[in-house]
Length: 270
Image (tube, rainbow, N blue to C red; front, side, top):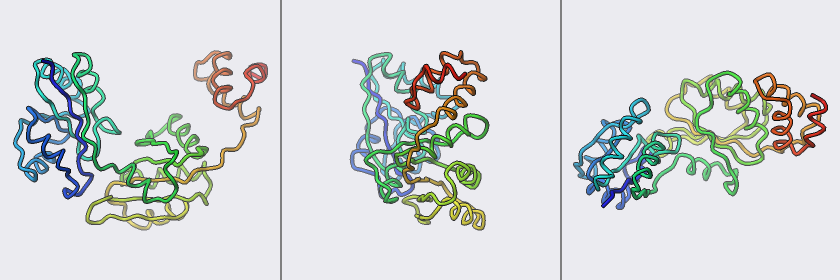
């Protein structure tokens, strides 16, 4: 019999959020693969579970995925946990799922606390349509393009930031949104020093420039009003793609798809 991989969502800061289902699962699996074995040891002690624990983090996940594949093929039940939240969602886990699927293993999930949905709910900006951006690229064209897309997004946008990067993220974002865009900054959700703050982008920059940023940040940006893209702007976008290696035809097609403008008009201009 082929085994099972269980993706286990763990508390994002408060052990009181451990569910009965998570407790029962971790008490009965053959092995737990954990992003941080020390943090997981605290969780396991809290619920009275004592399975075998192996590390699984960015850097060793490909090696560990091969182990997981072998164990599932042998019929074992394997749990995967990260430091907080759900594996595979801005955390390690994707390669483990793929490994389990390769050998026909059952893949299931124990849902639980999420900083993404918690911040989205408390923001008041609406969650009927939203996009999650994970952590922003640190630098370069990828970062600029991501920030431009976030600023132009007509859905609520959620992303993570660290204490070391939050001021830079907010400052670079303001270049594209302007100073008055509303946002919600949720810090240390569910933990002792939880803070939920609302204000404009420029007010957020001022606050966390004056106050030493601490803890994990989840940022929610209100939806923007998507402005129609002019042909000149679309041509500029296409020219950037050509500079990066796309053919003129490919660039025109990609920008036409993104903007809704006619491909032939963009192609003729470039």
